[in-house]
Length: 168
Image (cartoon, rainbow, N blue to C red; front, side, top):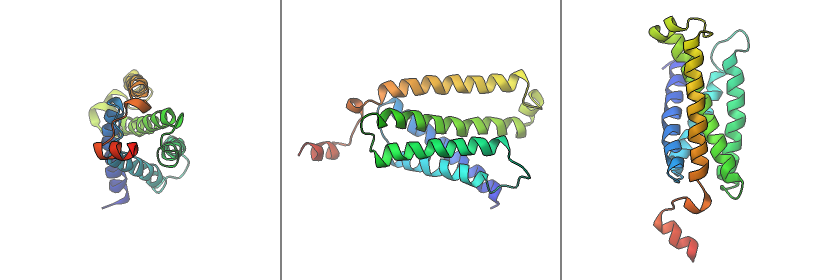
């Protein structure tokens, strides 16, 4: 499998697992396994993007750098700070932002590779491209806001065994 195909596959796994994590946040659930998969594959997506051939810095490299910073914050909030106090909302914002950035690049790639989208916005400065990115941004802001409200400390679902152990 080529590096490009590996990068694309990892990216798709990151987006899919990120969607599951976001759904979990919307229901007040941590989904620890899915979270680990999402964070790992999204870090790999950004990192492997730098290994793809390029003769100069591209916008995707800048988005990748921003994504790695956002992911570092999400990882610290989730694993080092264990979602304590304000780290809970910091985690939600950074996780949703990381997923958005991955989807943002996915939309860009779709407009570059899918013939009907490329025809609608060949230079990615056309209204169709701007509208697609605007809709994605508004959607992620709305979902992130709902996740912030629903993923509160007192509402997070914990497995029964963990709940019993924490009461001892």
